[in-house]
Amino acid sequence: MMKARLVPVYFDPGRDEQFDLQLAALQESLQDVAEFLPPVALGQPLPADADAVLFPQILGEAYRQLAHFKAIDRPILIVTSEFGTMAMWDWEIASYMRAEGVNTITPYSLAQTRKLCRALGVKREMAQTKFLAFQDNPGAGFQPEIFKRFYWWEDECTQRMFQKFGVTIEKRSFRELGAAAKAIPDEEADAVLAHWDLNTPGVSPHSLRSAVKLYIALTREIGDDERIGGVGINCLNESHFSDTTPCLAWNMFYTERRLIWGCEADTLSMLTKYILNRSLDVPIMMTNLYPFLMGMAALKHERIDRYPHVLHNPDDYILVAHCGYLGVLPQAFATEWALRPRVLRITDPNATAIDALLPTGDVTLAKLAPTMNTITVAEGDLEGYAQFPNSDCLNGGVIRVSSGPRLMKRASSHHYLLMTGHVQNDIDLISSVFGLSVESI
Image (cartoon, rainbow, N blue to C red; front, side):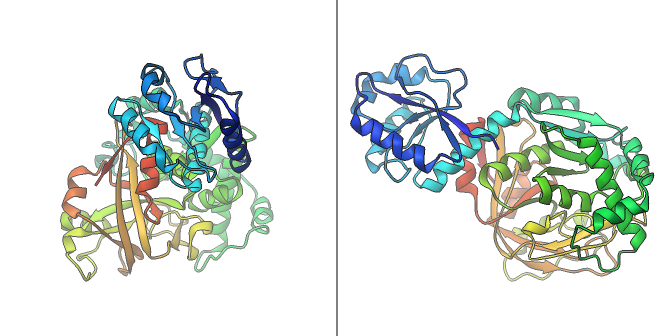
């Protein structure tokens, strides 16, 4: 990952021994996540390659230098204690600046400061990042009445990603990828499998080889292009182009190189996942939301006739599931993990799916809104799992949120990113780095 480039700023002629001592302390504690540029005086031109301005020392002079603060066009970090945080004496100045329209960032733990540095590095990294999307004619395959509604396939969505974050989408043929995978010899797939310890109950040798062959074909497509930060496939709508699904490949790529994956070539989920996983270093996955409030409109899609029994107000619960189970979850994040035969009839009978569990307890749901100016967030509790035999939800998660009606009103997609822990405060922290507002749902 790229390090954040921070330019320390001092009040001219206020650079003194205290400034230099604090800067030296920060250089030591942040050396693995930040690069420090030569200090400059407030009001002087900033280096073009600086990601953010850092104030290791803040003085009352700030009140009289408001115009210079307003002229700063980068995030402003105030980190003035030897412990890598704001000092408690900074509240007045930070509050004054915010009231005057200057957005200062005041982390109150070293962990937060490090997350900010990672986020700044991710922001610069994104300007050089591209996602591969394997698709041929999205929406024209299976279930077009559903798939033609999705914003992530619109040119407008792709353009907004580039304009806002610098991320580009490179589209390649799923038809050609599927054919290339099928042509790979069994011996080559077996050689790759020999290096992996996988739990595959009920999966035939042929199905397992097919899954690995798709991984090999994708490896060739990616090559040594370090700009590729994520890969997605229109794996359900155009599943007729392959005799398998990419679930195992996504697990292998994240394990090997922390590559972000995109089920159904959902580039907006990929972008959200990329920002949050790389900035916050938090376990993350994508899944479908089935709010209890939606009744049969949601249940019918999973081929079940009831929601699981819950202990509290059912209106505040969501069933989460994707492709028969919780969703594509890398082994690194799972308390239990298995590759099983496919569940969805929309996929080839030879295909596979991941059945894996996140730890129960605190979780957070989040996704970028279509305008990409807002990220919607809901904290909740993963209370357990529900199994519905002979359905499309053989093992789904049961999540309680603070307000089901509010989520119904403000959610931006049926696809949401699910993270372990309550991380809304961290999302709030890094949101200004990316020019995002946070909406609690």
